[in-house]
Image (tube, one colour):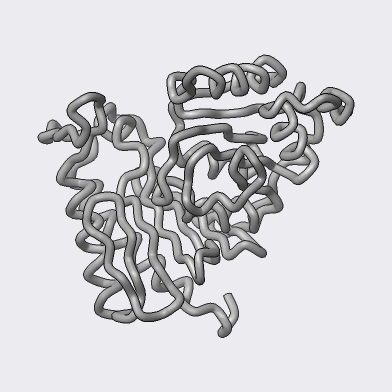
Length: 270
């Protein structure tokens, strides 16, 4: 981490430590679950709210000019180019099911560009960090650099999505074109799937309906490990929507072409 970084890496650890104290108090405990969407099931717990409150307080104390955009509370409009994007428990459905594939997402934008991100999984003791140029995993074994897999053929790829039910109508047709080509598809991993792409165990994630809080922190981690994250039409992904994260640029283009059903996409596969 260089002195040119607007926020030191150590501060992300401070934020993750504060969130961890709140989330682990509620994990695998019978807790009250509220539903934010009366026409669907979008759960939220005291773990979500308390963790985001703890993170927000620390940011406000240390960087009072920074903006804050979080999952559970109203935006804070800053006076600097920097905005924090927070999801205290990404994967609340996994959280309430007792599955350790949720994570705390802490991202920093500079003028709408995701520049630093952390995904912390406190139950397993993993923290994934990236600045767009380099990425690291910090766990019980120490700290190591992340590198995506050299997978250039969709037929060899291991992919993930939170659920195929995310996709409706034409979206579903596009997604099915991709899944029908891959070697293996896994569901229900939320932010943990993106971490596995950066770590080199999975090759792509294809999703839809994401919010900024679901993806902004993960972009610098994937990119710093050698991967690519965009929308389905190849645009910047920091605002969410239809998202593709891939291990490398070549595989990424194949997936974009397959989603759009562009003629010749099969010819790009080796």
